Image 1 (tube, rainbow, N blue to C red):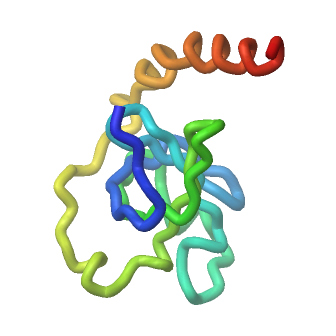
Image 2 (image 1 turned 90 degrees about the horizontal axis):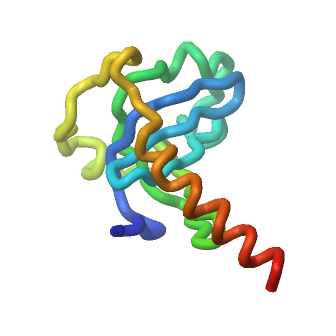
Length: 119
């Protein structure tokens, strides 16, 4: 599976929104955390009013943790040129969001963690 690298600009779908962060799902089953501090250079008071489940955003990968296969992403660190490129995907309705990609990988992740604990 292709892993995103720090500095990559990728498109992902918001699958969960909390008061201070959102979880995004990317092609290949990768997930990322979009923290409220990475939304805008301006102060954002209401995170849940800024992003919604099912919306697709282009974001920049700012940190990648290979041990957890997870990443932190940012909207505010994208350059004006990166922002201008149109999205290649369309909005996904929340009813059609599936966690099947995550569910398929879960046994593999559990097995990896068990090996680490037993090593």
